[in-house]
Structure formats: C-alpha cells, structure tokens
Length: 439
Ligand SMILES: Cc1cc2nc3c(=O)[nH]c(=O)nc-3n(C[C@H](O)[C@H](O)[C@H](O)COP(=O)(O)OP(=O)(O)OC[C@H]3O[C@@H](n4cnc5c(N)ncnc54)[C@H](O)[C@@H]3O)c2cc1C
Image (cartoon, helix red, strand yellow):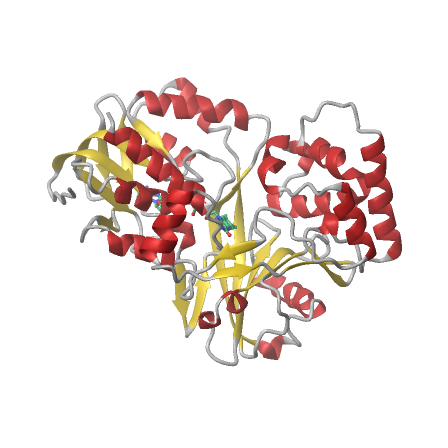
C-alpha cells in the first residue's frame, strides 16, 4: 500500500530516498508488503545514473550503461515481466586503442596486433610471474596487477589505464577493487591471444542486455509498474534525526519513519545527520570518490567504427573510454547520424581541452574532423568511482553499522560506497525489502 501524505508532520513505515535502481527496486519489492511507503526523489526523473536523456533527436545515457543480469529472480523480473521477453541481449564488441592500433579486449589476452616489442615484453614478463610468483603479500592494486599479469601488461595497460579511470595510482588503492571485475585469463588464452586473433571472450560482460530506447528504459518500466504517484519528484532528504527517527524533507515536511532506506551517497547521508557521533563524522570524512566529467557528442555522420566501446590507456589521450551509443541501439541517434560518449581522465572539463579530445577521436578514426560533429554536450557526475584506498575498508563498515543500528539501511552503489553494477543495486533493493517485510 502506498500513501502520499502532504502534511508538515507525517509518518510512514518505510521512507525510501532516491528513485534510482536501488530505490525503485525497494519500492517494487515492498508493494504488497502492507507497509506504508514514501519514495522521494530529488530530481524530476527516475533512474538515477541509469537514466537516458533526449537532446535534439539523440538519446544519451548517463555514460555507458549496459546490463548484466545473473541473478535468476532479477532476470525474470526485468526480462520476462517488465520487458515481456523483448530486452535485446547483445554480444559485446569491445576494443582497446593503444600504440596506434585497435586490439581486442581484454588487453591481457589479445596482444596480437600490438608492436612486436610491446607484445613480447607483455608475454615474457607474464611468463616470469607464472614461473616465479612474487612472494610479497598482495596489499595494493599494484601488487594485484604485478602478481596476475607481470610488469609488461602492468606498464602497457593496467597501470596507465587504471590511473586514468580512478585518478590515483594503483599503489594508492587496495587489491579489493580488481577481484570481481578484472578478468584473469588462463595461460593458454594469453599465449593464444599473442599468436592470432581469437576474439577471446573473457570477463563478466561478454554479452549484455540493452533496451532499445536507451538504458533509462529499464528504470522507466519499473516506475510504470509501481502504483501511481509512488515517486514524489523534486523532493530531497535534507536532514535525519537518528534518535527520534525523523527525516526532514526539502519541502519542510518532517516524516517519522520506522525504516529509512537511503540510496544517496554515503558521505551525503552522513552529512545530513543531526548531531552525528564523532565516529560517524570522522569516518565519513575519510571516504573518497573520483568525479567524472564526460562529453556526449552528436555526429552528423553514421558511426565510423563498429564496436560498442573502446578503452584508451595512453596517458597522452585525455580520455580513457569512448562508447558509441548509436551502436548499442539504432534508436539512440537519428538515421544516418551517430553518437559518442567520451569519458575524460581529468577531474574537470573546460573548453580548451576540446581540440585535444577531437585530435584523439580523429586518431582513433571515430571522426574525420570537426565537421563530423553536430554538437558537444559536456556533462558531470559528482560521484563516479569510489576510491578503494586504505581508509575505505575501515571507515565504510563503521558508518554502515552506525546507520543499521538506527533503522537506516544505506543501499545502492553509493549507499554502500563500492564499485558495483545496476543489477547489484536492484538486488540490494530486493534484499532490504525482504528484511523489512519480515520484521
Ligand atoms: C561511469 C559509470 C559507468 C557505469 N556503467 C554501468 C554499466 O554499464 N552497467 C551497470 O550495470 N552499471 C553501471 N554503472 C553503475 C550504475 O550506475 C549504478 O550501479 C546504479 O546507478 C546504482 O543505482 P542506485 O540506485 O544505487 O544509485 P543512483 O543511480 O545514483 O540513484 C540514486 C538516486 O537518489 C537521488 N538522490 C540523491 N540525493 C538525494 C536526496 N538528498 N534526496 C532524494 N533523492 C536523492 C538521485 O537523484 C538518484 O536518482 C556505472 C557507473 C558509473 C559511474
């Protein structure tokens, strides 16, 4: 049962903050629980970072968002129930651009085509660590890279690429970051990938789901399946009194809740607490995140490359990944046109960077020149990549425990402050709903 109460003082069983995948999933899984729920969203749209925006006939996602659904109940809900079995499953076409050539992904299993001395160094150093694994304990991301890939792959891809994406050197991060998302190939795959071009399908995303009308269609469909007016748009959480279990909203309304499910970034939730404990305030200050400026680029020509996305490790190029949105779905761009997303390595964008970005796109044969570009739309994500530094593993559990003790469930990628996928956010929403329903 969903109630919308427009009073200055009100109460509900569950107050959900944020209508991204985690918040929407919580509301959907609580819909028949008999609990009174409120779901407030600071913006005018559902979907959070998975939303798709339309601009002059183009559809731009909020950076590449393709979906990997491995949990059976989530897959059934999304693919069978919401999309009626019509959610396209696409085979990944992914490239790496380095040393002036395109190679296949992952780099570590596809050295074929690289300059000979680069490929040789990668393979020789890789074989060295296989024969004599370093006995140093793996503490940092750099240790993890050296242990699994050797100095050659580290130098030519892993270190420069990860430095570009995270904004810090892998020696400043713990090894935890790579465990799930970095494909560790078998020796035979690495050797085969050096001799010929096998298009080795490694990694967690060899195929993916992508909605025809852009990534945001998923959240739109979850929203449409909720009881009408479940989401209260343009209403933000302002502050929380943990002891009294009262949340104050941007409308001035004070909501007494039994459970608060927050999907907003953990440091923001901590900052919203009235009279926070010293431990909460101190640990929240330790959380670090890399912001992400990126460019949505509309092209007035069809796509000049056939891949979906490409990794760019070279420090000389000012971006680390390019996605061709219009290769994910033809509906993302008008006929005979195409669109790109360029994720920048710097923390800020300014117009003076554009000519270097255009040079990079030209070098990669994504555009012939400036004349291919219809418009450029700069965007910014304040919270993109959580930094797994030494403080991360200590501070996050303390903060989450403090909240849990007070009936606050902080979930979602930025709610638990980790590196995770949309499916993980949907799972967290489902699991917290089940926990609350059984209390
Ligand atoms: C660069 C990048 C690429 C990614 N690519 C992929 C991918 O290809 N595939 C994939 O599965 N995942 C991808 N992800 C991860 C994906 O974006 C997240 O896992 C997912 O968006 C998490 O959903 P969420 O609901 O936890 O958070 P969000 O999507 O951030 O939703 C949180 C919501 O809370 C709202 N909010 C914030 N503050 C307040 C407030 N005070 N009051 C009320 N509402 C508030 C926000 O407006 C937002 O709507 C990517 C992430 C990044 C950064």
